[in-house]
Image (cartoon, rainbow, N blue to C red):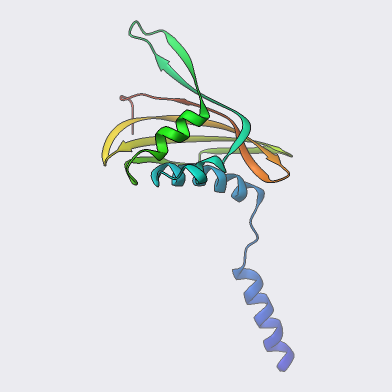
Length: 150
């Protein structure tokens, strides 16, 4: 009977504790980015980016032409950290995650709110690389629009 309770305890503990998957660790970096942005925390934001990170956004010009703008990640971190905590609130949904060894692709539709007011929506496309110190965002490109948001 004593062994039955030991076995039961081991099974219950084993079922309730779930090891973090590779997908979970990739999601954690993306979530940390948006937590850092919402909390205006430059140090936290820096932990998410690879040293050679590329940050881009796709916009439409007045005549409807598509333009890709490359932004400086350090300037983004500086700008985000100067906001009032809670002002920049990007709400994402994880739609697609693909992983092959040290490379991960993450697709996240989002809605962005500034000071509690809807600003725009779009999608983020992340490429992350797993370095010796963990997953880091190597490439981030997004779209931005004010119409066609859910």
